[in-house]
Image (cartoon, rainbow over all chains, first blue to last red; front, side, top):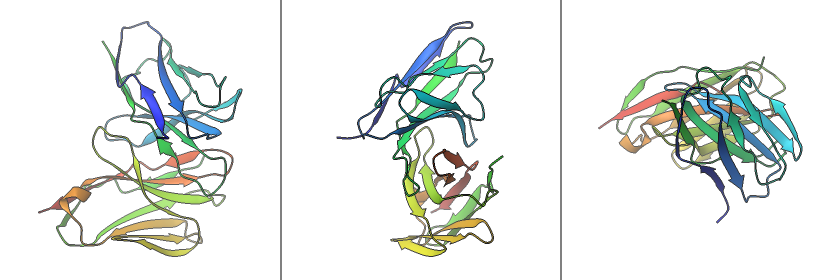
Length: 113
Length: 110
């Protein structure tokens, strides 16, 4: 089955630690995205990538980093510089054309302990 | 900055009624428009997409787009308790990314 896999589903981070969230897709999509969702809020864009080895900052990129070394993978690192990382993180992918939807993974819930 | 706005709700309707959800967007360069449904703690799932002005119907759902007014709506006919969720409006900008609204929480009362 084609889809997007995010792991882990739940992640706990200690203060000062970096953590990496995994996102893998087998839909052969060129574009991939990372969104953050806080309780009762909409989705805010962290980073996006339209092609391998290239990515752009979204609205809230500070404290996060990404890489796009393979078409199917777009990991997100939450660094210690991100002061309030507790949130629900969603990875998505799409074809790079106008008439396309975003397909979402199941999300990773990150909690700072 | 590209913005998408929605009434946060909650919007409460009785079972069997029509639920009307509205969305406005700021940038006329928008390309495609989407409605996603999100249950609590889950990821969004696509309900409808619309690319051209006018109405698009799919079962109990109708999406309406008016590019001149920069307005998108979603009508849910014969609302069911299982429709209770948050509905996210999204706008796709070609070659860039999807911008999401804050979502409208819908509650369908039995």
